[in-house]
Amino acid sequence: MPLNPGLTATVRHTVTPSDTAEALGSGDVTVLGTPRVVSLCEEASVAALAGHTEAGTTTVGQSVQINHLLPSPIGATVTAEAVLEAREGRRLKFRVALTDGDQLLAAGRIQRVVVNRDDFLARLGDR
Image 1 (cartoon, rainbow, N blue to C red):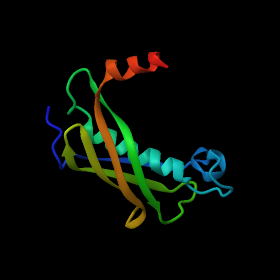
Image 2: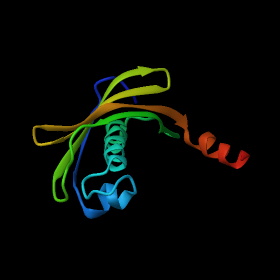
Image 3: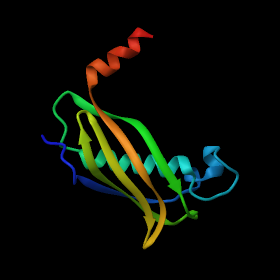
């Protein structure tokens, strides 16, 4: 199944107390924490690939660049969107954004790599 540029997905999430910077240990305020922003954007990138990878393969995160621009309170419903912009061999490059309605909360890039699932997990045994 082809992993061609243009694949896209969105993930919607309502911010809970467990999503806050305070709960995640990334700050002391009760707003959506940056680690959760990254997680939502990665979730969207994985969703964009659903049903498009070959049997026995998966993708793993390689790099993340996120600019967290605005806070989001508990109860806000945010939407993460990922768009596959380029494929360079096994590397998949995504543009990601997190919004609340028409407000841009975060934006950046995520790179994932296609790997053979069994080979990838076998490397853990070498440690």
